[in-house]
Structure formats: C-alpha cells, structure tokens
Length: 320
Image (cartoon, rainbow, N blue to C red):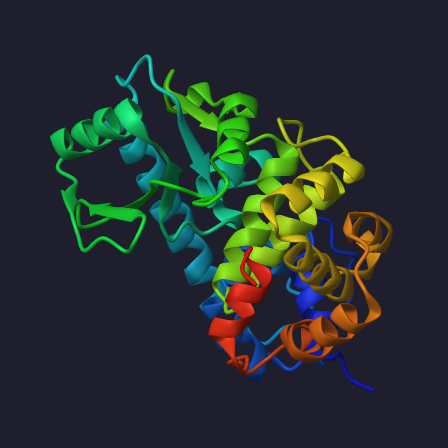
C-alpha cells in the first residue's frame, strides 16, 4: 500500500521527519495543494536537507524548492521593511498577531513560515501613532474591512485590528496587559502571551469558517506543544486550565474544541496536549462540531467549503 496524502503531509510538515522513501506518495495531488496551503517551503526543506530527496520525483522537488527559496526572500523582505517602518515608534503598545509573531518563536528557520500579511492589534493613541509611522514609510490605506484597517506599500500588506474582541473590552484589556515585549521590532511592539496566542489563532480560524490554510494548524500544533524545536517566548507547556478559562471568557469554547480536535487528528503525536486543551461540551455540541467542522476540515486534499459558513462563524466566534 502506497504512502497516503495524510502520511505525506505529516512527514513533510514535521520539524524532525524520520528518513524514509516517499517514491510511492501522491505527488501529483500534493504539490499544488501544499503550495496553496502554505506548506511548500517546509516540505522543500525537509525533502532536500533532512530526507535526502526521499526518492521524490525531480519535478516535485524542483517545484517545491523554488517556492522555498522565494519564501525566504519574501518573508525576510517583509519583516525587515516592517521593522524599519515602526522601529522608531516609542511609548505605545501594539500587539503583533499571527505569522509575524510566530516566524522565529515557533519555527526553526525563517523560510519555513510564509508570511501573507502582518497583523497588528492597536487602539487609541497607539493606533494613530502606528498609522502615522506606516504612512511615513510609504504605506497607503486600502479599503477597510469593518474593524480592520488595511495599509500596503505595494509589497507588504499590514492589517491593523481596531478590536479583536468587540463585545468583550475587559478581556481585550487583559490581553494587552499580558502581552510580552517584542524588541526585535522596536520598543512599542509586543506579542500575546502563549494562552492568548492559542486563542487568537483559534478565533481567526473560527471567524474564517475554518477556510484557512493548513499552515494555521502547524502554528497551532507548535503552540499547543510548547514550541519544542526552538527556545523562545512560546517554549513552555500551555496552562491548559487557564486556556480553557480564557476561552470561556472570550466565548469561543466551541471553537477551541473544534480547533484542538482538528490538530489532534492531523497530528496524532500531540494527542495528549490537544486533549487537555479541549473544553467540556455537551455531547450534542461535540457531535455537531464533529459532523460539520472537524471531520470535513481533517480530510486533506481538495479545498472544501463548509456548509452554513456564516452560521458557523456566529456559533464558534462568540455568537449565538
């Protein structure tokens, strides 16, 4: 029996893959899919530098390697440009979300984690100072999306969230208070603490109706595992009881259950951590989540559109 798509996915998205032949893997199905899911750079590195090619076809290796090389250049360019744009900002508190806060805190190499955009949380005086700094660095406003301001210099898109938890101001205040300095981007840049970082990823997945790249679940895998491949701000085991308590305050317990269940299914090696992260839900809620979210998202391959996406967002992201 040949290597399945899920096996290929697990091997090539690992930070420590075991040597094996992948000659019989479904490369025609995997390559384009992995590129669309943000997985190609890590896959290319594993194939070339950890698995000695793994008997993969030359065309697949060449295609993935070209993505890897481009990803390194693109990510470094975006982060360096962002640093130059905000480094002089002082006396404010801006929270860096998502990929920009994960690149060096979760991933052993900057090229492993493609960066589609830079996400920030800012408000009040800090928001005004941030936008002023970005505009001075040739970032121009684009169409806003609700509580998100979008600016771009033509190469890097910066998405500034005015609110992360619109109806839960006290919880957002607490997130700001707990945020940890991120001096690499200047004195005003901070990142969420570990439990808040987990919940921010879960919230993003839920608000997108789980139509997110699989790279998001690699982020979640590393956060729940305590980032064992690096030494940094997220390299500790989460406080799972605290995580679940905050999920209740954020009103995203169902989403945390769904996300933890998906990453557990994708990566059985983190079964224990994912299980500990799951809030207790009624059997009917668990069955609904399994049927309409967990099972479909865990099935790899062709992109699936989940039915009733708007209702799912309300259900999972703090709505009714």
